[in-house]
Length: 637
Image (cartoon, rainbow, N blue to C red; front, side, top):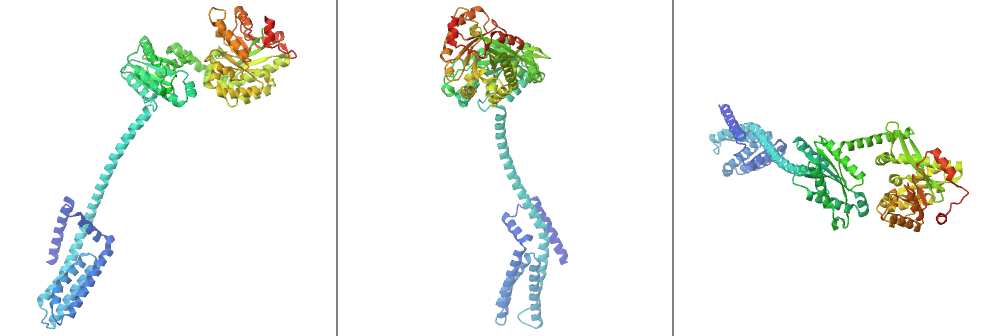
């Protein structure tokens, strides 16, 4: 009967507990109570329960001793302490540890035996109800222990699971907070990455990638448009002369100026370096686009402000192409505009060029040249020809070595076509070394063969001049050939000398110490700044053909040539007039005491055999001291 009642109680408690903990999520249990319960009844806290049992046993023994001492005198303590003993036994039982139950049950049995012995001895201080009470205490403790132990087996895992659920909920909330914060950071970083990926950091304009995407969108929409590539002329010289900070300010200001001239709906971006791009949907006809380019160009008619570099004027070149007339893909359109811009710069800058098929063929031809140049050197397709230079007394000064290329695939290729390609591709370094070696060998051959004073002039590109091994290569060519360094003359363009004045001065000083002459070629085609002439150790000045062409005409051409000659003479330089084709030109140059003449009037560039004949007829003997410029001029008069 008792067992059945206990089982019913356990089942009821299980159902109640499940309802409370599973359905209501411990709604009726205080969180702190649950925490205390977990701390006490956790398997990890068994030592704590043992301590509680030990304390209860101690106090229980004290109470029993007190009862025994006062038993013969009065029975108050025995009766007054009985509830205290019961409480102590309950506490030991509710620790739900085996030791606590055994101690509580043992005390209950001892109490029952003690009362039974007193009854048997006929003690007047006890009665049957006390015995029943003692036995009931034992039965109650036993029932309570097993009932609560059973309950704990169900309750503790549920509470533990509920706690885990709370932990998971808290972790989920924390994770949600972190995810929200992370998403916010990601969104911010995404915007920053998008800005870095699609916009130029200096000007804030869309970059090449973004502009290509925008052009793709226009093509998908079948929208007709024009593309204008814009390049700043000679911007490298501004960067080197004014510094990169000023250069950056100019680029930023350039973006603002172009933007101010744009019509609504047109797009502006920066391609990189000194190049910008305009995509116009409002001006997709050729003539209209030209006017639009002029409108943009008007924004460069005044100098840049103080912040960007006061007094700096920038000229601009433009390359234009149209969709769908010229191409139908982004890459082709961008390439076409780039081709047109490069053509504008190549043709003299400060102009616009429209892309067309002829221009495309020209680029294809240049690309084919670039591909064939290395093989041409391997196959000995290059050769040197020699154009004579004469003193006014008809004596031969020397030759300018000029390269020619007879390609197996392309036929004769003009130096005007392949030299710029060689410079663009860097092949000019290898080709220039071959020219230097060949010219020095030819100089030595002519000197040994004819015993004449002959100067060999060799053109040197700016890329060669900047090369670290330039001096070593010249020394090697002279040593290999055995040629006299004092008979070698290097021709460098005026524009290169001006762009790299400090660097050039150091290099020229080294050449001077090697007794190598240096000539400034195409004088007058550069920046027309004459102050640099007295700063550089130059030997020869060659007046460009464009000035010689006008000396026989009315105008100030004669005065310019005369001024150049007089200035060069004051600086102790030899003057060579190149491109002389008419006797009128020669007559005027003689009156102005020009030192040397070079041009078709006397001779075209000659093959080696013909050059030999010129040396034999007009060359000065090695034993003959060349007359000074003053002596030649007196004789000429």
